[in-house]
Figure 1 (tube, rainbow, N blue to C red):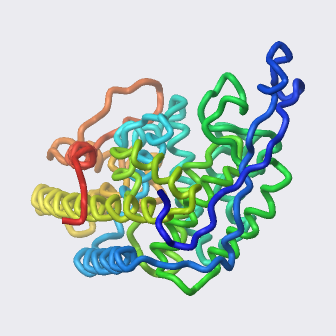
Figure 2: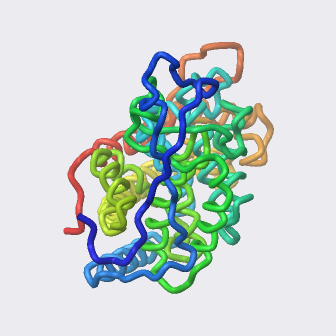
Amino acid sequence: MARDTAWPAVTFERLSWLIEQGGDERRSAGKHRYDSAIVPEIGDASMLLPSEVALISEDVRTAIAAFDLRVGDALAPLESLLVRIESSASSRIENVAAPVPDLLIGEVDSDQGRSVADVIGNVGATSVAIDLSHDITPDTILGIHRALLRDTHPVLAGRWRNETVWIGSYSAGPPDAEFVPPAVPRILDSIEDLCNFIDRTDMPVFIQAMVMHAQFETIHPFPDGNGRVGRALIHALLRRDGLTKSATLPISAGIVSQKHRYIEALTEYRHGDFVPIIELGADATFAALRNASHLFDDVVKIKELWDERIEDLRADAVAHRVVAALLAHPVVDSSMLEPLVDATRSTITSALTDLARRGVLSAIERAGRGPQRFVAHDVVRALDAFTSRSINPFGRH
């Protein structure tokens, strides 16, 4: 039952599932009909915030500020890992599995595999969402979608859907679906209204981000990639309003362990209750903060260990610059490091070989004729530990 939040619920219109759209002429006439959502306008809808929701939002703001204060400027290398963790987890919600270590290897390997390529696209989408967060428009949303799918589904990338989609009953069509998003002619108006909602300044940004996300998922404006774009938009709003200053918190890592609750919260939102999606987002954020803080501790220890192992090298040795790049790029070769450390490829190769002797790196077995790759296993183990922690129960306590 929806709470008294005075928030508009989704209504429906009865449409026909035509034969040329995939309908089955052998079915009864009744089975050709289905209920398609009419998404209410929220651009200027009055929002009645329950007191407990306002408190949750303030708890989130305080916790994120404390994390930013603790990690400070040292977060820069960690941010690259957090974006990849978030993208991997967001993809797992859509049943696309590519662990972060596989993703890191795939980023320097042309033979990536489909799942890794999908997650690399998600890394690009999340990065674009953050880069364009200062002005979120329909074109911004198309740009995020284009970054997500341009390498894996170029025909669909950066285009609104032009056909009916549905959730549940994937083979039977919309008449038997659990939920049918708005018809194609309603998409653009709904997205324009959503962007008007995003421009509002009369509510806490965390609440705004989670409501925006639920509204976006209800509109479902793309044939594929809606969930990943919608979660990338959460980070865009949080960064735009300064709630997250430099960290991309892996909120999806908390959501993926509560996928059933996530789906239920989106359903409740369509019924006019935005509280469950805000509560879920808050719990996922607190879990992300705890986990990211633990990862930060691990990274600090790793960097201290590496510094000990190279402390006898000259201060201007290339190995120092390579080590500085490893936290953001734990899988490397001389080719990808060349523009990062400002040295010749042969000099970088010598530095990599020396770091492998010192236990900072390990050589990866060659799969082809390209440059030798190396992996910082200390970082990979820290990322694996992050993933293991993310499957545990979470909360605000």
